[in-house]
Amino acid sequence: MQDVQFQVDSRGETTAVVVPVKGRKRLVAELLEDIYGHEMIRQRRREKRIGADELVKRLRRDGLL
Image (tube, rainbow, N blue to C red):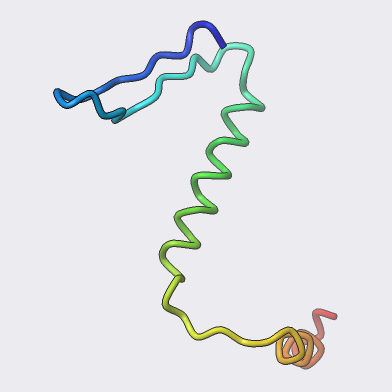
């Protein structure tokens, strides 16, 4: 990816990346999916966790398994 550009702030920290879309729609879509996934993980970090057995039980109860 020769034409990717990194934007940096006055301290030299990367603040943005510019990826040309032309010819890279699939790559951009995958990057956006990854960003969305990481944001969902961040937002749900403090939610109560359940074990695998409980998950299967709930999925069966709801008719999803």
